[in-house]
Amino acid sequence: MVPMTSSSNANFPNMRLRRFRKSAGLREIFSETRLSASELVMPFFVTHGKNIRKPIEPMPGQFQFSVDQLLLEIKEITALGIRSVLLFGLPKDKDQQGSEAFASAGIIQQAVSAIKSHDTDIVVITDVCLCEYTDHGHCGVLNDGGVDNDATLDLLGKIAISHAKSGADIVAPSAMMDGQVGHIRKALDDAGHNQAGIMAYAAKAFSSFYGPFREAAGSSPKQGDRRAYQMNGGNIRESMREMELDVAEGADLLLVKPALAYLDVISNAKNSFNLPIASYNVSGEYAMLKAAGANGWINEKSAILEIMTSLKRAGSDLIITYFAKDLALILKEGLDE
Ligand code: PBG
Image (cartoon, helix red, strand yellow):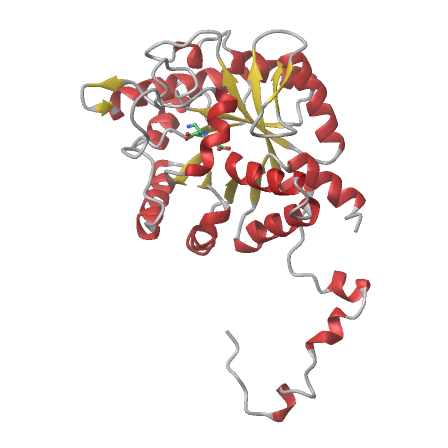
């Protein structure tokens, strides 16, 4: 903060901040926060089958894609300058252990190798979690007391290895198990994948904003909720501890999630760590804006731009958002106001 000066030089009428708001050119050159398509990550839901492009009802404009359709969609987004994708899988069958999550012919494993065989440049990030794959819908294996942290770690390690083996550049453990980053780092290294990075869902809050995702991914817990492993969103000091631990365990990139209701967490993360910081503009944030836009209650495009600008301003180096394609188009073509 610059201290207030008593010199009359710094005051009105000498200082007029409107000078630099006068024209589009001035506004543009003095713009402090700029977005580019290359800092956006597009999440996708991948499903078995062929020629499938199934709309996700609470997320208008988003689909479950079979691998062939996903490849077509990826072509479109890369043409707009998007460089990275985050993949979530819908398994054929679910069981107690979530076995398809680490099966070599699992949906994610198939998708990653197909993507990489078409385009080696695209950065592929994969979700490492069990909730889409377990029949009970929790992010780990259950014991009498709930989700068994340490038994889950072994499965997360297996998932990460299978993703890296298929060609994933970065694995993204989102289960919020203690020790997951360190365990996965060791598992990857022991299996010869020391070049696979880890995006740690470091500060992931228990949130009502994941609702639409759970419909998209079929991953709602059948019983209970995720409060015993996801964070209390009101705890910023604990968020910092989560991040410190993940850094110490070998994270390459820290993620804050959700994004919009956690801007202070993003900004604290940016000021405290020298790792890249990502934020995840989650399904509920997408759904709210889409609903208001569809009703004509808000100008959707300029609201997208304003929200994404706030995530960048708060400190995000990467933004994971279902709006990635829309935003990349806006950045290319401008707002049609
Ligand atoms: C799975 C996972 C979730 C999301 C990302 N990974 C759901 C959850 O934790 O319930 C939510 C993403 C979104 O809402 O867009 N562990």
